[in-house]
Figure 1: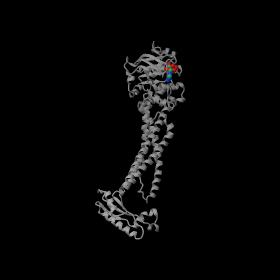
Figure 2: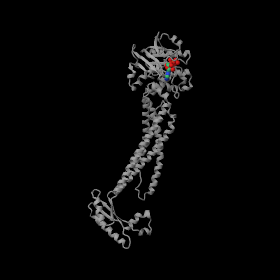
Figure 3: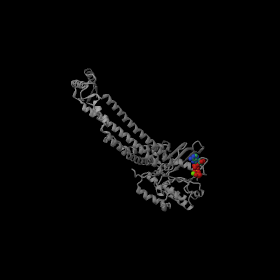
Figure 4: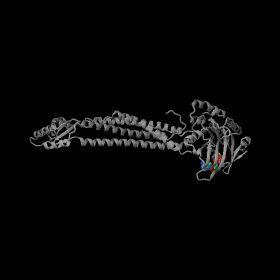
Length: 296
Length: 229
Ligand SMILES: Nc1ncnc2c1ncn2[C@@H]1O[C@H](COP(=O)(O)OP(=O)(O)OP(=O)(O)O)[C@@H](O)[C@H]1O
Ligand SMILES: [Mg+2]
């Protein structure tokens, strides 16, 4: 396809100088958008997986003398209430040591922290298949144990999932806009090329060339320029994505699940240069056909 | 080759008028036909409309009014994708040659064959042969800008006849060559004519027309075409 003969001297055209770089930038941006969408999708689905099937009960601490013991009492009462709920598989109160371990990355491990009245947490594992009336459970809990509240993560999670959906749509929109910009540029580059080579095109037309014979030459050229640009863009995006991935890895110990691009993401990004070349080719072809249709 | 049987018309113009943009009618009420296998000269003063008439005939222009019937097809009724097939049956020598400057003489002459998808081995066999015949064996790989006017003209003629057209339209094909070569080129046209190609040669070279007086002559004046014999 790339070696096909061309009667039109398209090699020297200005398009050859600017089109690959434009496509390179577009493919780079598209790669960022695609990678972002995939990573966020991965993060959310892992959070979703980790979080569904668990509930957390929070018990407010009681300060002052003997507060510690009273708080323990409340925690035990809350554990008891949760054990009664049908569909609950396990209930586990985190003791103060575990709580401090959770907080250590943020607050450090000084004695000050040790003396703080910390809210206590109870991990509840539920059967994901069971339908539990969480509002009723929350009601019963707060009546039975003052200062206890139920957090089912649902609000938080659904907001997170909404956000990730929005970001995915945004990524699709960005990729779509990038395709539009690329193809608009190819339209103008092709029209310019046709104006420059009007004489040649007219001669080919008059000696009986089909429109497609002429269109193919522009399309072939656009394809190879698009592919070259796409590969440059891909080559630029790989190190950038690697650096971002590496930086995210260093963050991980904290609250982010691992930020890795799934295989599908790699395939998607890897296909971007071919997609760009295809967009360029089809656009050039359609442009030439449209313009030639005006010849007698 | 799809030569028409003698007697049929290769092309017929009926009440054809032509104006460029909003200008005056350059051609008005043109009625004539070229029988298959005929050889005509087209004469007329400079600016009379010879090139314009040829342009109508090779489908480089549409008439402002009237009908053009080419190879029994009314052009106005013919679909766009069918036109290339008709154009391929016509060889044109343009008055200004219209050679492609970035291609060698060989590639220029090869164009009509390549456009038709003729095999490259055939192209490499026929094109140098024809170029040698018109005296350009040494210039196969020369580009048009490095050729003399007469050499360019011969490349243009070679390109027009390489596809063995059914209809050859030549616009001042001898304008830039000396008498000897002019005679030779007209003899080439006569050879083609004997093989069945219908020929129309536009020229204002009266001497040449006189020397080939056995061919009928169409004369264009005041936008009208008349047959002289
Ligand atoms: N593209 C054009 N736009 C406007 N007017 C044109 C165009 N081409 C030709 N004309 C006009 O049409 C008339 C006929 O021109 P044409 O070229 O057909 O003459 P011709 O007989 O071939 O002349 P010559 O012998 O000098 O080649 C002229 O008056 C010319 O000015
Ligand atoms: Mg003329």
